[in-house]
Image (cartoon, rainbow, N blue to C red; front, side, top):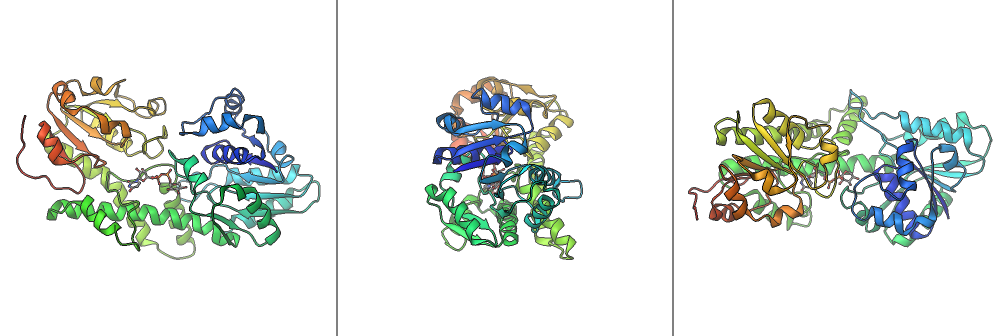
Length: 436
Ligand code: UDX
């Protein structure tokens, strides 16, 4: 099948790689010439495990271009994967979707299925249909489908290949059949519904996941005060199938390109129809509170941070990505610097993106270099490699062996045995520090 993908961001590139590996001939277009140049040279413009290899493996089946016109006249299915960033009032900015719809209208010459993968407010498929109709130069039939994307950064390929469901929103059975055929190889269950419900499923899913994390973070606050261990609590809760054990990891909160933007959008959508979505507002508030609580904990235990040397392990919004969007590291580091701390930073992958945002910090290339002379080390992103840190050796390099673990990667007992003061989230400190 001939497939087009408009937008070479996370969603578009993963869609390109998956469709080409299935065996389809894919035209991937992006208005950014730099991105396309890189792709044509075999270079993936984003860091995402397995993506580069998948694109390389299927390179004979991937074609690149810069215009919507090329996409509209290549594929029988045209996936729209452009950004819907957050506007100042919290609503999603649909200008890129609208522009693509207009250009598709102006350039399409034969029947196509326009598939919206971008996260868009309920009713957008209808809006796209109207725009295409308005600008159509060559009258032909077409259909607009909603097919929201649920992949997570850092494991996007795995998620796309092993998704829990493919949601297809359409009012046309023949169109659905065509799309199911395009995805058939993945053998993922398909959930067929109408376009507006499909669009809503995406917002509701992300809002629910963000709420689940904020809920456990609120529980963590209580755990610290009453002497419970939030990890144990989450484990015990997760055994109940109705709750499930996923997304109950307490920490300094969620970040990334989706949760913040999509919760804001849903609050805005609700506001517009006169529903005050208090619960989702609280989800966001708790998330904003988590870095503040963390900083407070550092300040209290360090007796202020002015002139203290603090090492930060991990700055990406989560492991296995170089994405810094809405990363919790940003408010934490900025506040520490403002309070007079000397902040040293290490991240295995995100440095090139983070440097632009986190100024006034010292970048280090190794964890040993980071630890040198520090009064505390903060764990902000739970990169797997941090599990293998030789903490005994690191301790020798530090001025004061203290760890503030914002992701609950380690156990207090273990760290105390090595001689660290250890603080985490939702796990009260036990008395007595053993030194060895
Ligand atoms: C999310 C959704 O999971 C995905 O379905 C959607 O398509 C896009 O948004 P993503 O933002 O890539 O994916 O990452 P995700 O793994 O969901 O993590 C989001 C944030 O939540 C990260 O900052 C992560 O550190 C945090 N998180 C996740 C927790 O704090 N605790 C958890 O238990 C899980």
